[in-house]
Length: 168
Image (tube, rainbow, N blue to C red; front, side, top):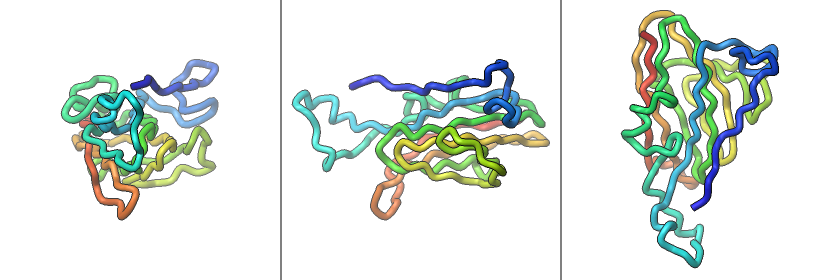
């Protein structure tokens, strides 16, 4: 069924910055978002995209509830620390990401830094889009991030995936 994955370019100095001279973070996470139509696997003579109907909704190749237990996916930091979450839409559907109401800053889109970070509490990614966001909590907080995989027409929710976000 093919293989794909993220390719992250880090600052030359090896520091914990989103890019050379960019904002600092304590830990970074990559969420490779995609969906999968398992019926395509059983069609050796090809597939017809008109009948694409995903039945698995993935974060880093794992469907619910598995991303919740993945230490490279779930966000777990101390209060006051900063997480950089790199979102990559590797799927065919539009995806909306929220962090359980927790605000964050969008700092880059498609590998291009923003001149000024944008405050947000949700971000919508088209297929192939990428966003970098910074999130922190001054005091302990525990929420569940939700990725909604949306239908192209009407934006109805076709599936979801969840990830715990905790600042202890």
